[in-house]
Length: 251
Image 1 (cartoon, rainbow, N blue to C red):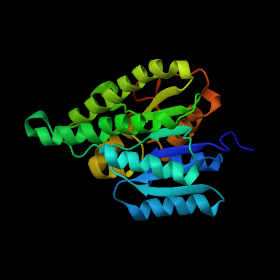
Image 2: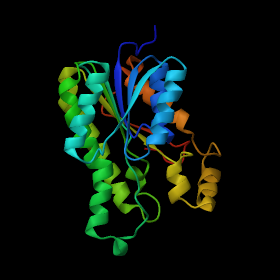
Image 3: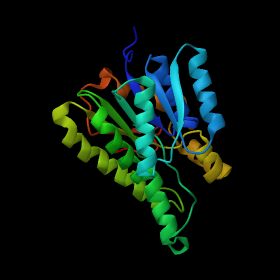
Image 4: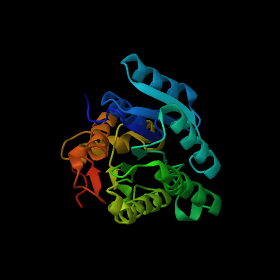
């Protein structure tokens, strides 16, 4: 029996890229996984199919993680599908939304970036917590951008991810008496749709060449780290940001 047998995991942004890899990895360890997605039903359905094809348990549920009402429905559907308790929460949902310098940003753009990265983490965590038993785990997603300010045009994104880092540490202290551990992961350059969309190929090649390991990371490697933090293998790690960047940035 795998360690996560009888556990229920809710993964926001779980349909593709890192979210899909996380969903697959947790399911492979026998967790029942709710795959949350925002607008790509095809990717979500494919992720669920991949899990079920190897005997895992998963459902896909659409919800906008920036809206409290939709988040509440998401959590209720998770409980309807898998039982009353949620043992693992992984807040993957987030995004850059676009590269804009300060003089190009307006209030609406700033708010959108904050909502999709920071507010979503707050709303989903708040909605899930009443149904988390003592000893549960939360894994948030920050970014290397929270440490170094991000690449060109990523000030808003870096700021939001810095907020996720601080939120993680504060919540780890608050939930410590319940033995609920809260950690976050801060990826560097990972081979995903995110960088396909927002990072020029020449920039990616330059960053990979400067990385001590000489390459980008892969979503599956990030998922292995999520599994470690979500399981008892990391029982004394709490309030931590684990960097996964191949050595491009050291804390």
